[in-house]
Length: 160
Image (cartoon, rainbow, N blue to C red; front, side, top):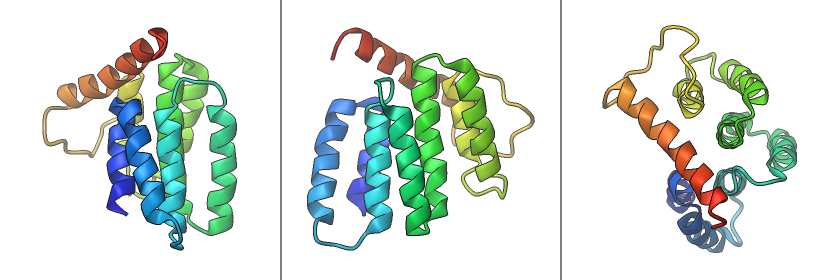
């Protein structure tokens, strides 16, 4: 379970390392009935591949599987991955729709910071006052998330 979460954290910043962490996660999950972690591992793969072709279709497929598994909390993770993908590709209109879906999925307050993060990734202003308290300044968090998007864009443009 922790291996999948490590792969999730690494997937934004280092898609090459995320491949290794994800492979280990799959190895550790093999033979176990860990639907939640298996689906989260597929979210990691989306993030790792963000900016490449096919992400939208894979995300839709994953939403269907999440519904079938009865694990609706995972939809938030898919939308965050989709937001990262859209920000990397500068797909502003589609990103706005993704942020709206993410906002609806986090309206209860659970994972509400995902909406702020999605806006930070796209260098968008927050749509209203945020209740999130970051461990560092909001400006630093914003810059860090935007930096991950820019690093991924550079990674893709360099052909790595």
